[in-house]
Image (cartoon, rainbow, N blue to C red; front, side, top):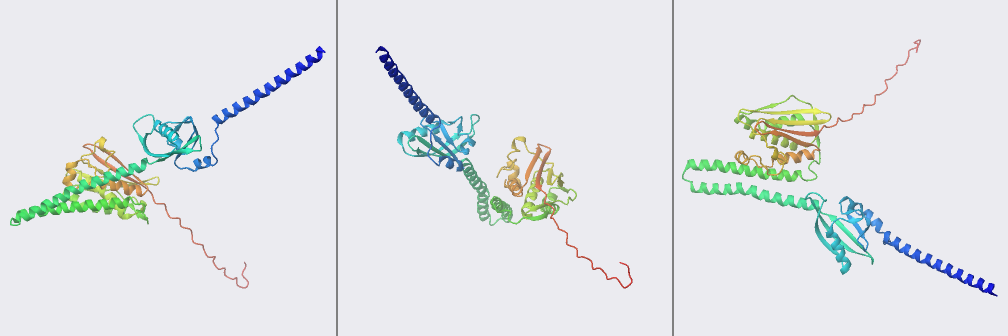
Amino acid sequence: MESTWLVLLSLALGLGVGAGFVLLLHVAERHGRRASEVVNPAVPDGIDQVLDALETAGVVLDPSNNVIKTSPGALTLGLVWNQQLVHPELLELARRVRQTGEPISEDLVLSRGPFGDASMRFRVRLARLGTRYVLLLAEDRTEAFRLDEVRRDFVANISHELKTPIASVGLLAEALDKAADEPEQVRRFANRLTTESARLGRLTQEIIELSRLQAQDALAEPENLSVDDIVAAAVDQSRVVAEAERITIVIGKKSGARVFGDEALLTVAVHNLVANAVNYSLEGSRVGVGVRLQKGIVEITVTDQGVGIAEADLDRVFERFFRVDQARSRHTGGTGLGLSIVKHVVQNHGGDIRVWSQPGSGSTFTIRLPEAAEPIIEPRPTKPRPVARAAAGDTL
């Protein structure tokens, strides 16, 4: 009898242990599934494809602000590192979205990296994604803001540069009216009025030219051009001024180089360099202009023996309205747009421009353009020559 009870008790104990073990397995499975959901949370369908298609930055955050999904743009712009948002400003916006449940759109200035003062401008929008997640979209507007600043600076510079000649014309016209009975004064004021009006006309023309160069269709129909002819035409435009200052312009030997482009624009670019060399050269000095063809690159070099450019100004000489010597530029009627026009012409032709200078020793500007490829001329098919018939008795 006792043995029967022992068997039943053992059986009950075994069943209890088995049930407990099964219960422990079930609990462990549930905990494991929850842990898996935390580590690899499920994101609504289609989000992966949307993020992959985004050109801007897209990020999905879980309740702990861990980045669980991100677009390539977010990594490229440095918004995400080690599965975390880098900038605390974005984390604060995510907290506000969770707290209010309402989408947020803001413009932010964020640091570009942990070093330096460089920054980026973003238009960001955050919204809830389901019940647990937050979606962050960030559009990089740094370039748009930079272009807007350039536009504002350009307009401000134009206003400043136009103010002087316009004011001068007005004052000279008033002086002419008051000196109507003094022929000598009238002639003097008239000469100055002509000078200022000519400078105003040059400035206006160069502003129009620079605006046209910045258009996308500046080289709508490029032609195969002789570089030697362009250099000769550009130098001829400066010979009268050079001879008046007893400055000799020397042109190197013909190169035979050819480029694709706009003849008028390239002539203006070379002429601006030659004119600058003459204006900033000392009386009785020389200006050299040469063309060299090397490994498919055409180099047009203009060298002077003038005042030179300080090293600190070399990076700025191609800026609009920048003048190395303000007083001399005003005296020679410079607008400060000549080198900027040269830069844009060269860039539109697929080239670049370089400058070397040393104060007191002169300057050398070098335009580098790709050589025009020789046209491929296919040989004309030759007609078969007729075969004369052999006369009777001839041996073929």
